[in-house]
Length: 322
Image 1: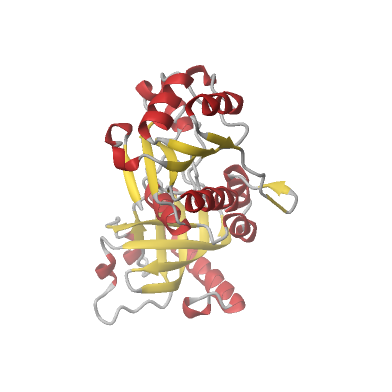
Image 2 (image 1 turned 90 degrees about the vertical axis):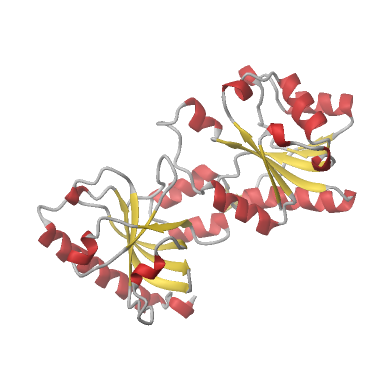
């Protein structure tokens, strides 16, 4: 899959495509249905299946503190799009200059001159251009003028309700990981590179791996049973804490994972530093709390580890059991 970083990097070789436009946060089942439609039409026409997305996402540009928590980092989103069969992704920088584009300029500069779109798939509620003056009807009119077809997407429903990123976030907030997995088509997971932490876990006899989170907000907070994959691990059971660690006066949101029964053949847990891991969330244990001291924190964490171990023993969701 080819990644095009910015409108200024569009070249003639990128032209001629079947395209769709959106945030694709989570690449959930609804998104996957759109991608299937785009890819099938692209293969039929012998064109490139193309996704246009935005960084930052529009809501993050207009109101960063009020923007919803991301389900996916850009890196994971690109990986999911590649696995779906997308040929190229145009990642547009959403800034003041792009925001000021009129609907007419958007169509001319991106769809016609930039990508040479021949077939466009968008939701019938899609709006674009400064003042949001562009809509589905405008695209159909523009398609007639410039020679590209425009079609909308069929609504994807599960359990009688529309699949959306908002619904996935609601399921995660409720601790309903089974529903989130159904909506996503896979377990909800967060990926990141292992970095050095404060080493507090070692003083509690519960060493952790700490993942760098490159996002404004997290869709989760609390203690969870998780499985970890990457750097030689496959569905390794763990107990995770997502939050700002109030007991130790933490100031940033972190994902810390204690790997159950982990033994790295003498290399030690330090061998995971700078490696990329994927943490899949399986079960909600409790909310994050502020304890009076480290002794109380240690007692609570050991109780969490027992709860996580009991969960994996009950479900069989550990290491090779998945």
